Amino acid sequence: MVSTKVAVAVGGTVVLAVAGGGAALFFTGGDLSFEQPVVQSVQTEFGAVTEETTAAETEVVVTNPNDQQFPGAASLDYEIYMNSVAVADGSEGGIGLDPGRNVINFTARLDNGKIPAWWVTHVNNDEQTVVSTQASVGVAGLGASLPPQNRSIETDLLDAFANDSTSTVAVADQEIMTVSDQRADWGTADAGRTPIAFSVGLENVHNRSVRLDGTEYRIVMNDVTVGEGRTDDSIVLDPGESDTFTANAALDTPKMEQWWISHLRDDQTTRLRVEVYGLVHDDGEFERVPLNVFDRRIRFETDFLGEEPTRVTELPAEDDAAATFGEPEVRETTSEWGEVTDETTEIVTTVDVTNPNEGDYNDLLTLRVNRTTTVNGVTFAEGTSAVEDLPAGNGSFTVSADADNDAVPRWWSRHVENGEESTVRTTATGTADIAVTSLPVSLPDREATETTDITGQLRSAEDERVTTEDGRHVLTITDVVAEWQDATPQRAKLRVSTEIRNENTFQSITIERLDYVVGLNSVQVADNASTTSHTIPPGATRRVSYVIYLDNQKMDEWWPTHVRNDEVTVMSADTTATVDTPQGTERVSFDLFGNDTTIETDLLGSESGSGSADGTNSLAPPTVVGKAS
Image (cartoon, rainbow, N blue to C red; front, side, top):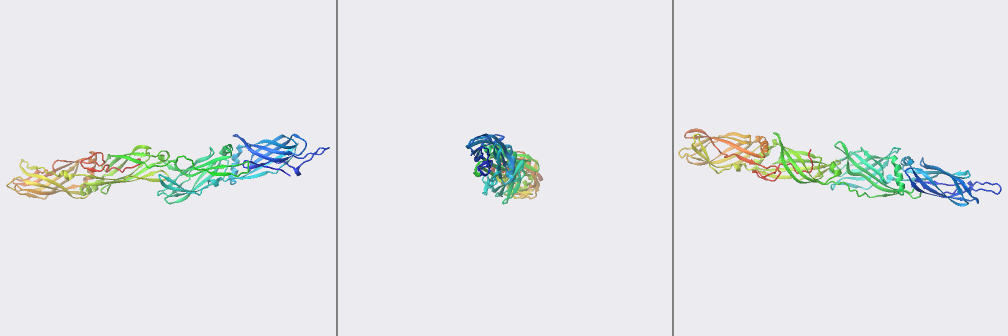
């Protein structure tokens, strides 16, 4: 009979045997007879692993049934195949056999350079390998070739990659997407590359779209990076959408030789790590986002020279600190007027901010700020600023918005209608664009009250003398009171009442007409006349009223002069009256408004002005967290 013992080598078996029993050969001559020795057992284990070869240390137990010794008469020839790839061959000669039990030790050397070729066949054969050993043993040139000894070994790395669980990807405590149904599939391997496709189920659970423009992957077996690169696989998911996302990666087939060496040196243990990150196209380049769409870590152990099956263990994620996104926080804002044109007035706001983000997220972060400022419900300034270089830690940036000067007549007329009080509201929405998606950023709305007191400054209890050209004191103006009566974007109606005393105790004086010119800085806002006549009896005092019409359509011209003059306006008035006196009709200076009135405001909150502001930065852009472009 044939005696055999299985020896496992590189996922297969090595069977060494000699013919015995019916295969025995006998020599006769005189009293000489010969019976073929019999192989009782073969044991093999891996030995030294070099960069070139892997030693398979083999112990063969041979029984010599003959009474005589055969010094150096036995020989051994062997070949080892892994699938169709010959990984080892050789021969051992000059083996001596004593009567009875003999232990023969020899070393079979596997060519590590053949491992990549074997790997190709293994992958293309659904991760199955047949290890075939062909051996022959003879004595004195006579022997028998044994049939090939085959052993099948199967790995199932694809099954280890599979994961049916669902995980949620969150940024800044906001759930972005779920990742589920992780799978992997081999492509057709060749000598250069081993394609592998990693697929995952993605669902957008965010209220904004999620996009990936590509992937960056890394596959590490022990400390050998066997695959890394980028793909252009992309996906866009609108809110609520789900789809399967596939990253078509590849292993570097020649690197499997280095993996094999590391695997054997680590007692046939491999720690396998697969990481697939998303890429986005940002500023003309692909940038990696800190969102891992496929992440598997496993350990597999083999027993190539034994009978144990391959064991696979899932490993927990490493404690590498994942990048997190923190919402920037505004510490302080200050605003000032920028460029002033006839059409617009620029508001420049400096924002002091604390940005907790560094590294990956900060490199991708673009802050978009949409803001709208209304005055009395009239949109005065609105715009969007994009901040792309937000400093990490404590820093500052500037944003600007153009106020529309054409809006001034509308909100000014409402300012007058509201008793010279304006409500300034700034609403802002912030969006942190982190390339793969966008996140809302909390921005405070702002409301402030701005007041003026033009009518209060026109009020006067002092006496104003009205004299003729020849110096005669004919009238005295006293106790001037002004009040707004009606205002539209076209005009404002100002009623001025005053007590007038006739200094002539013998004859009445009639005021036939009042002409007036009113200017705000260099802008003339009124040039008109009131033709209502008033007759004051001799020595009497009468309260009379005049309606002054101001052209609100000129307020868009006035506004730039006010801002350019550090928010200071001089209100001047030139009033004359046509009066009938005993000496005839005369035109006299009629100082109804008294001295020039100075109006100061502080709309951006830098300092207190005479037009009180119950709030700061009332016309400034909203507080934002971002950078401007």
